[in-house]
Image 1 (cartoon, rainbow, N blue to C red):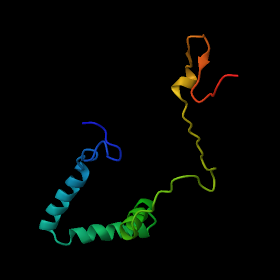
Image 2: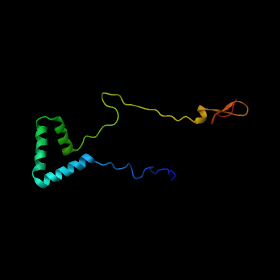
Image 3: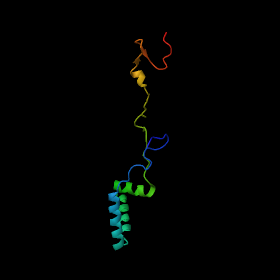
Length: 114
């Protein structure tokens, strides 16, 4: 297959990875729910109780579940300066000029020699 401008080289995207922990958690919750319908609300109550007691991880989890995760900023911050980058392309003929038959070097777009 040849590369077509404007088309992704990988249209299906990266391969899907198994979410082993999520799958195990869902299986466990399903088993718990079948045995005890009140188990999941008790787990939620425990999480909220931990958050109320000041457990930072529990507070973060409750906030993420209730309001969504805080977007991650990209770029500089108030404490750190912005990062800048300059990219320039160098023509291969300029880095390795070819010698012509008269022994002088020729560079593209150099104009007539004076």
